[in-house]
Structures are given as structure tokens and as C-alpha cells.
Image (cartoon, rainbow, N blue to C red):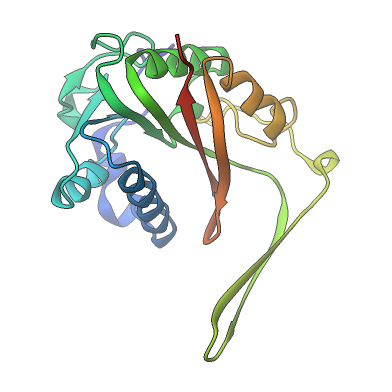
Amino acid sequence: MSNVKQVNKLHYEFSRYMEKERWISMWHQLDEIQKLNPESVLEIGPGPGFFKAVANQLGMKVKTMDLDPDLEPDYLGSATSIPLPDSSVDVVCAFQMLEHLPYETALLAFQEMTRVSRSKVLISLPDAGRALHTQIHIAPFGHYRITIPLPFWMAKTHKFDGQHYWEINKRNYSLSKVMKDFSQEAELLRTFRVPENPYHRFALFQKNEM
């Protein structure tokens, strides 16, 4: 299933793909990677390539990998069989990509990402956890955001929509379960939801010492 292309290049047209919320999420991608100060970065599933383009302008050395040649990745291959040696890249990342694979396949892909990484693995995933979100602005102090999570028993069962096989905080995919399963290959350092786009959750992992 990991070798099946779900969308064509037209899916990534600017007007239909890069909503403001996605731009905000990309800011967090760049911020998290830059704080790690890596010499090399591999992005799995680059989509339209905006992350690489901006990251390289900021002095980061980003290479991409995808199974779709139309996206012109630096490396062509499957996420479950990354064509790079062990511990060959400082940071490996995948943003809103792993949910496009069946859950068990996504875990295999994460194992591959960890294998290729020398140190860190950064991912973002859709978090469908229901919550009440509000934002207020108090001059001159700035913006304040408040999030109140709703009980997990209110979670919906996920149905494959042609792209996502699973999402965090859908039934059978609680946050604790997903983080525990992904932590088999690496230590979870921290996880957070993007305040301006709570549907995107980031998780930073440290590769386990051999």
C-alpha cells in the first residue's frame, strides 16, 4: 500500500492546498528544525516543496524523498524502504504524511526514518481530538489562546476518506497509544498541537542509542 500514489501533482496547487493554517503549520516545521541546527535534513513526502524551498533559503540543507516522480524529489522511493544508509542524515522529518499509510505501515515507515536518522525525527500528524478553542487579544499584552479538550469518549471512528487511513484521537488511535507505538524506535521528547491550527500535532523524537 505504501507504493500507491493517492493524489496527483494538481492537488498541491497553491489556491487549493496552501491555506493560511497550513502556512502557520509550516512556520512551526521550520522553527522546530532550525532549533535543532542540523547539517542535513531529509523530508519524506514533500508535497509541493514549499518547506524545502524556504528551509534552503534559511541556510538549511534539505533533501526530499517521495514515490511520485512528478514531485521531482531528490530521492525516489518508498517510505518503508528509504534508499539511504543507516544514520546518514541528522534529522528526518515527515509532515502530515504518515496518516496516508495504513497504521501498521506507518509504523514501518517511522522505523525506516529512525534508521536513516543520526539523531532526531520530527513528524506532524492530524489530531482529530475535539476541543473548544478561543483566542482573545488584550492590548498591549498580545494574543492569548485557550484550548479546552473534550472527553475522549466523544471521539469518532475514522473512515478511510481516500487519503487518511487513521488520525490521532479517533477511536482506537488515542494520543497515548499512537505516541507509545511510535516510541518503540525512538524516545519521545515532546509533542504539541499547533495553537493556530490544532488539527496538526507535532512530535519530536530522539533516536535510541544502539
